[in-house]
Image 1 (cartoon, rainbow, N blue to C red):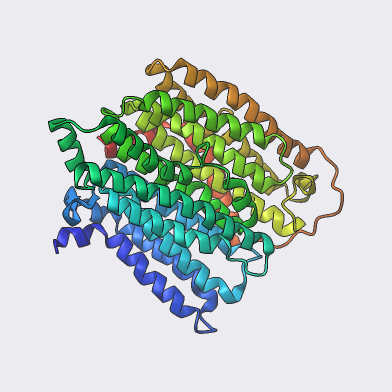
Image 2: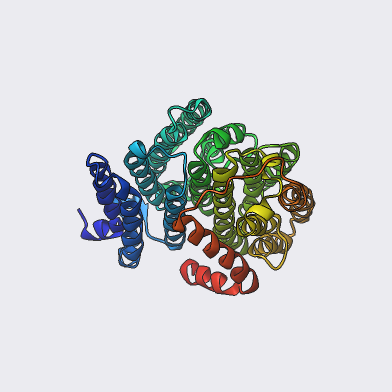
Length: 473
């Protein structure tokens, strides 16, 4: 095996090693409480090894993986997501202590799968990593065995996920039948050199896209999202809302935008229609939600529509805007879910009405949740405003004015249901006195950091943009 290939997957190898250490720690009663800390250490060591992996060759494992700007950027984002979710999990009161080692083991395993997924350059490797993420996700969604809603979430996620991956596999098999290979570079060369049945190619690509759209919660493949988010443990819902979505968009970018877009004649109008449908349905259904986790679930559907706008236009500025939006959205959504964890620990509920008067009880958490929601709504000078601005700019630059108008109108609609939560926390009188539960230092720390990042990036977005440019070019 090429030593450079092993050098490239060094971060993943470190995480695998720590995953088994965490699993073994669960056997020892004295070390069980260290599972979260060991997992966080694994993510930190893995992140520190990333620069070493960047020095590996461009094409690795016989073309199954690729070391390019997209994989470099998303591997950093995914490790940041994993670290934040671990910190939030350490402050989650409903996580059974006897099962904590297994929980963190699964969290590290799904992180490994996501890291390999964003570097995949072969449809077989893409399918394998997609299925690896899905299988572990089913377990994590139903991890609270004594909670009927968590079990229901796991079953629903499994049923919908099995259907979507089956459709994807069928599409991949059709691609193999057409080209005799699943390597994306080889497929593009064959497309450029000769003819292929366009209708068969179109059908196969639509089936492949369906599986990716499921991970991204793009309409009409979004139906599973609110039920799974509501029933899953809150840190797991936070992970689902950002990690697999980033992977799904990476698949769409690598397969369709970078490779198949020149031959997929209907890509631009189809992608634009899906983007508009996704953001509109997400926002409309969010209006009537009375549970904060379901509201955030529909919010993530709408946010997926905004992100998809950059890939629909398919320009370099659109791709850069998409990656910037994924980064900002990940921070803000994790901040929102983190604040929900803190408040739910106190009120023992995720009903929006039970958040009434929370500003008087816990003003810091109420302010952090407010900042996260306003950022998701795109209110200046928060980071979410700049994310939406760059997405809008890319649509206008590509003369996709319908997409730009759809983003603006949907952002106005979204502001209503975000404001409903804020109004409940600040203006409504509490129905009953909340019992404030002491929060872990880890949770408080990550909420403060995300609040600072929300303000800092909103004022100086060019620092992140320049970083993206350095990797992408």
